[in-house]
Image (cartoon, rainbow, N blue to C red):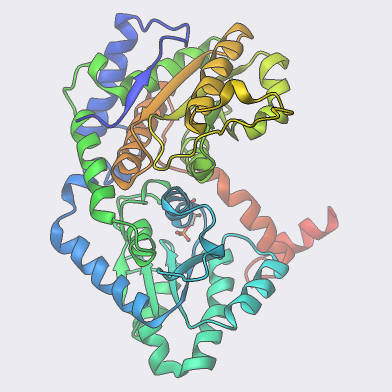
Length: 443
Ligand code: PA5
């Protein structure tokens, strides 16, 4: 079964044979590992390489944390944060924190910013609860999570002592390199490995995403199963028209060539907001280089129709829109008739909220198309682990193909170093003395 239905009928694009061939070749290049960035293609066959023993090892470790802690702080940034956050938000009750009886440990995130207020508020919030931590960094040297970990580690050690801290802290990092690896070895933390050949933004299906998700009670086997099925559906040799990742990659590149420089990922389910954040990193970091690449933006509708809607409808015509559409909600709420009908809404009586949402979606789609915003629709049957796993792999595969079609290496990110150099120079990091003088003179 293919969990993803891609509809390009409102994109205004018919993909010519030449482009179809190029997309098939780009897909083949990902599988033959002969293209740019071929050191980082471990994600291509990652889902099918995950076996029951790996899932079990992650679940076992997650169960230990779940037993010990009411709150698990997951520390990481970028690719070591956004995947887990996106899936967790998608799979969570929107108001779970208001439920008096918490049935699952709460997984919170830290290290994805350097905000002092966020850090202080987090420490305050943790006071009343038993805690554990998962610290995630492939390089093991990223400043933001390293700062957060230093603080959370100290808090855990202060409360439980060093020995017990080694039962409450789990690291996910490189097999051999980096400060986090050294620290974990020295402190005796259980450790999961991020494969060398899987880059951060493609790592959600490694322990980077799977461990915190299992700790939060997400069914990671189903997540992986969805990705495995999508791996098969987009495999090398699948004809262009049957490969939704290839079609999506081709269409967005053709739109880009026609001047559509901004892609807006839209969804009508607020739970998918962070899927948008994850997707922005995936595409922005993979394609935004050599002075080219589609700018990835995201909106949550219908909320953002009351803010960004005006621009999308009538602003500069350099946009196209990709909608993640959910075929069926998990819950049922019906609008009731009202005797007085003062709000005039009785025409909706008896209708489910999802029917109204669907009509909003269809109405917006046609309005945007009429306004010159080509529309693609990625439909998933429901928001569940299986469909989200499929969606993740669908976008990853499309991203690899799309980057090759664009003519960039989608698996590096040289641009993210620039800010770090400046920040270290401004903070007088040893080794940055000359840069420090130079940058301070520019302030
Ligand atoms: O995609 C990437 O490579 C980045 O977003 C990284 O995931 C991010 O910088 C965090 O890196 P690390 O896991 O090494 O701490």
